[in-house]
Image 1: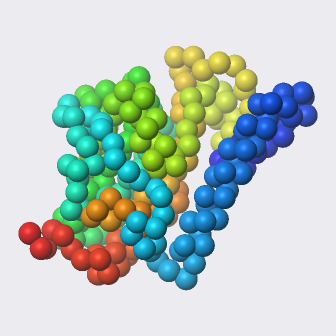
Image 2 (image 1 turned 60 degrees about the vertical axis):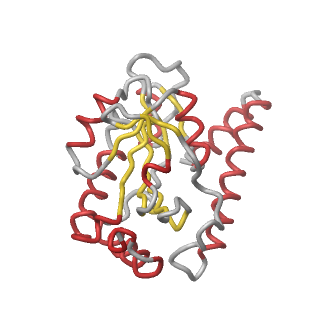
Length: 236
């Protein structure tokens, strides 16, 4: 997705939109720099030292049963945090299915893990809608929504890029075609990154899984985290 963002910036520059292209290129370079910094921290390691990578932070959202929650409500458990939206045709159902399979593979150790699905589409993803959606994958997954401002704030904490695009633009990006410049209508989709973040029981970044990571690899990494940093569920 970052490559598409840079390409879009270059194309805009070529047709004369220099100011907007510069902004998009700057965003791309900032994300590339963050990715390099994170990679440097993780070089030769499975996990970053807790608190070393500035990903994650406080939030106030609404869960899928209508309760206002903060990050403190999920304290004491490893978090698997994934951003998406219920109308997503590909990345979201695939990733949530992989998270569900990883939880099943973990068995009793899954008690130490709390998966969170944060909606990037608060206009349509009401608590009721999310309750129906996450239940289709696994009973442990908690869906979170909120106001547009709340969602923007938590996405910023997790460095999660997203944008509302027309359906035509979304599918054009997926197949590498020409981007559609029309304004998003009622059939809009959300273009977003596909990382799943593994956070410590203190909500500190440990590592992340890119889109397509196999459930077996997720479960293996979570087991390593539990072995290294402890199992808070077993300590209660």
